[in-house]
Image (cartoon, rainbow, N blue to C red; front, side, top):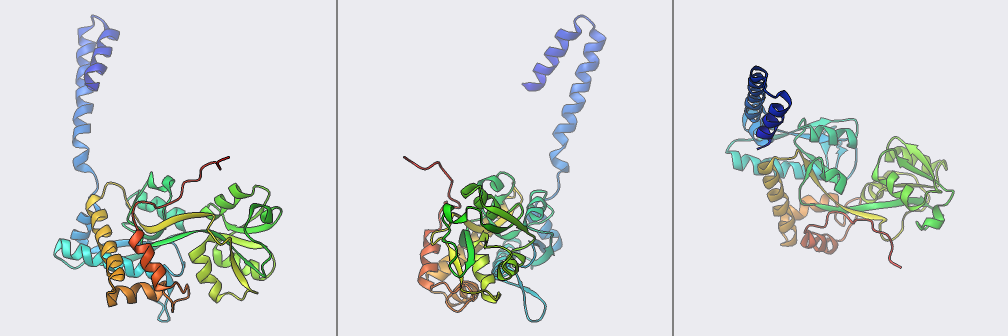
Length: 317
């Protein structure tokens, strides 16, 4: 119907000039023919590419334990790496051929999101869900829960807005931590740091009063940092969100297989499956650097539904 209206408008504008009208109609028809043929020329889907190459491209935004870290042998390991391995196994079963994960290191989370959006990378696991990001990539069901908190030392801050007024808060530029702290207390003095690790170093040297960022990443990094009485504040995260895998949009088969792989892991953990418990506990459980109780992990896995992130609303009177 849209193309007919275009032709009618052209006809009214061109009046009785039949030759011009005929040329306009032919031009529109040629454009419609090209548009109709465009879908056939689109790039292959992630699953089609995996079937052809036997590979799934996993984007890695640098070291971010417990999701990504360098092992003793120099190889990349972590919770996200193990989850990606489960996804590759699910894709292999679906395609009937071996599919492996190939890691591709990028400059950081925001650059990686652009690559996922453009279809240059198939998976970004350990990704923080936000409604803004959902507009550009697809997300899986979550396999972790996190939020924005502040890491301080010596109990100097309690995480309330008043406690942040005039304080030096280290934040990674463009991160959720920066946006959350800025919205919570505009009078805080934000200090840009290239990474959370650099922020913790600045905290230890007294260059900042606290570091704002992902609570899971901060808690894990604090174990290796030399800090005086490291404390995460406030008790309840300033902003909570789910953590899962991001994928290029409109790759429904890949998304279904990713969700199936994660759901099997969550259900296995809840059911007491030894392999699932070992995989998750290695990175999140009682004996990990994070040290979460199994009961807490099971409770969250059972409650995984559709609530990926809290939406900030004005406070009620």
